[in-house]
Structure formats: C-alpha cells, structure tokens
Picture (spheres, rainbow, N blue to C red):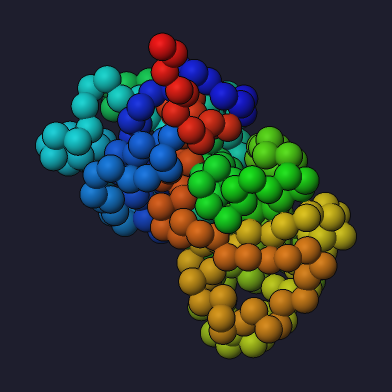
Length: 270
Ligand code: BGC
C-alpha cells in the first residue's frame, strides 16, 4: 500500500464485509470519519458470492437514496480473506466458492464505481494507524481483530505488510481462531478469565515471532477489554482499538480513495 496520493478522493464508499455482518458508509478518508449513516446487514447464509454481492449492492443503493453516496465516489471493501490481485485466496469464514472469485471486478460491476478490495484486518489497521490507536506510531505495530475470526495486520514504520494470517497459526494442536476468536469463545462457553489466559499464550507466540512495539486489539472482544486485560501478559504495550466498529469501513474507504498514508488535506498553494 503506497503512501500519500495527492489525488485521493475527498469522499469514498467504505464497505466492511465480514463473516457475520456487512457494514458500509460514506467516509471522509482524510478526516477518518463517517459522513453518512452506517448501514449494517447480516452476512447472508450461505455466504455465496452472488448472495454477498447482492447485499452489498442493496446497502450501496440505500446510501445512494440518502443522497450522501454520489456516482463520482470510488469504493473500498475489506474482505475476510487473503486478497491477491482483487481475488480471495482463502475463505475461512465465508463460503468456499469465494476462493478465486474476482470480487473486485464483481463489486466494480455491481456498484458502478472503481473499487479496491483488501483484507478486512488490513483495512481496520490502516484506519487505526492513520486516525486511531496507532497514530504516529513508528516501529512494528501488530493490529489484531478478534470477532468471527482472528484477523491480523502488521505495520512497520506505518507501512502495511499485507495479508498476514496470524489467526491460523497452530495453537495447542488447532487452528488458533477455532479456539480463541470471539465466536469460538462463545461456542466454547469460556469465561473471560479462561479465554484471557489462553489468548495471552497466543499473544506470547505472536510476540515470539514478530517482536511488535505496540499491539492494538480490535474487533468485538476489544469492547470488553476491562474484563480480561489483567490476564494478558505482553511484552509490548497492548491498547484497545480506538475506532471500534468504524475502523474497517474507514480503512476500506481510505484504500479505495487512494488516501492510505495521508491524514491531512494538502494545503492550498497561493
Ligand atoms: C481470515 C482473515 C481475516 C480474519 C478476520 C480469518 O479467518 O483468514 O483473512 O482477516 O478471519 O475476518
């Protein structure tokens, strides 16, 4: 993801496609703020490409009807998969028929606007680095989103290393997110104490590989940090995400608008 782009669009549609919900809003990518209402729909089940694209198109249509989303605005979408050349390479929490589907092209066609697709945790991380808990932070920053799955995004001196998939490292003989995502915590009926202890061991594993200077925790479980923070023993400081349920939308819009790495409007020349 490149740094500043003086031609970044002033407004963009941000879409956050997840295993559980699909959220979208019109965003001012430079300010890092939503400028329309945020619309949320459940991810259809089965979450096939045609069903998901239909929901995204419907959400965009509703934003168009408010007058806030106009034809000139580009779009960005966070997608819960490794994304290469606009296509998902994996589908841990979506229908497997997504693998290899040209999601970027499909969205461009249905939305009728230029669209960029990136991993959902990368999108949330991009927003947190520019406008939230990672603002101005140099060195190695690890952003984790713990919800339906475990997403991860890595930054070095503010530069994204895309598609890091830490949710799928082996933990106690299993794929980590199947034991410790927010959904897995509920499924396993774990107390915050038990989950916190196990998650702390997973964080130790991540720290052993990556030696981050800061860990930002996002996703649904970060809202409950007070309930388990005391069980997390990390070397690097761990802070909650600042933007919570808007980070994914804002980061996707920033990427779509070409505004990644830019957080201030260019000053006008006299
Ligand atoms: C996927 C990641 C995604 C994360 C959060 C994982 O299962 O492999 O790509 O970022 O879930 O949605």
